[in-house]
Length: 121
Length: 148
Image (cartoon, rainbow over all chains, first blue to last red; front, side, top):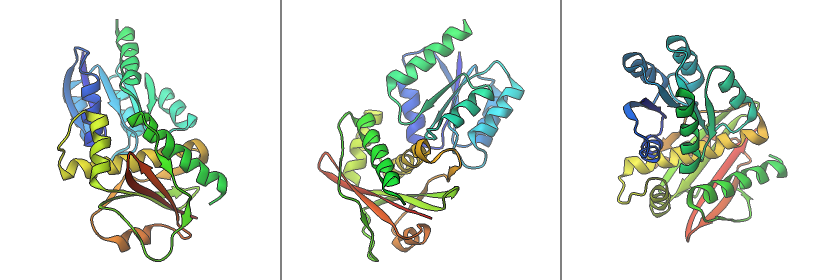
């Protein structure tokens, strides 16, 4: 399974990669903004994306819309500091598989990833 | 700013340190900032718009950030760029978590990292600016909030 990691924080991208290293995922790229994420997504067509919301150039929810247009069966885990129910519901309605609010633990992201992988089986 | 809102920020800060490091931070008594601005080596600002206007900044010294980074990444000896990135991410997370209280019309900017220009910090916040002192694992830092 191919994974794309999107977050405007480099330390968060590194943390997500480290936390998910137990899974046998091919990391096809990481991006710090929505536009770069879309470029990598279009080129690599990953199966799973972890997607931040508050980012420069294009926010995560706009990026999610475009990802769903390109490849609707992509499993997207939105990972955001925006900790309000409305944002989570909005992300799910747009097609996200899961929503994780920051700060999150390694256990929490592993559970989200397990659910994604089970869905894909 | 109401007392409930200040308590909301304190709760978010408390939860942040506990969640990331497993050990709680002690919050000092919040106060209204006077003209002199005390900031530590690293400062990040989040602009607030929507239902509220103004900004939030978080400031800390290198040892605190190095320890937080160690909890997140399990690495030591991180460079300056990583620590500036970290303080931006911490400020973003704390501000974004406040949507639980303020709702989805509380809009936050991407983090703005400030290097040495204290006046620039002052301009972004709407007075009165409330400061919440934080002590975690022997390290001091603080969060300042100035919202209309």
